[in-house]
Length: 138
Image (cartoon, rainbow, N blue to C red; front, side, top):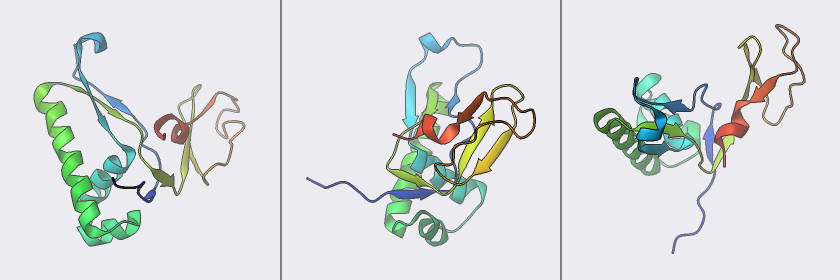
C-alpha cells in the first residue's frame, strides 16, 4: 500500500469550480470530480502551454507524475464533454501559492498570500468576501 503523496504546488484556486451542460437540471446529471492538482496540470500544459518538465517543476512533482496527472485530467474532461456530466473541481493534496478572494457584492477578485484573511472588499468595502481556496481544497 502506497503512503500519502507529497503536496502539489498550485498557483491559485480556480475562479470557477463547477461546469455543467446547459439546459439540464443539476439533479438529472451525473458528476465527475477533477482534483485541484489535475486542474493545475490542465492550466499549465494546455492553457499556458508549458512543456511537461517545466510544468512539473512548477508543481514540485516529477515529470512522470505530471504526465499521469495531465492524462487523468484530460480523460475526465473528455468524459464530462462527451457524456454530458457536471464537472466539479475539488480536493487534492495541495498547497496554494496565492489565495483568491471574491466579493459576493460586486464580484471583484483579489489575489493574496495564502491564509491571509481579507476583511473587506477593496473595491466596494463589503465584508461579504469568499476565500476561493477554502472552497476547493480538502
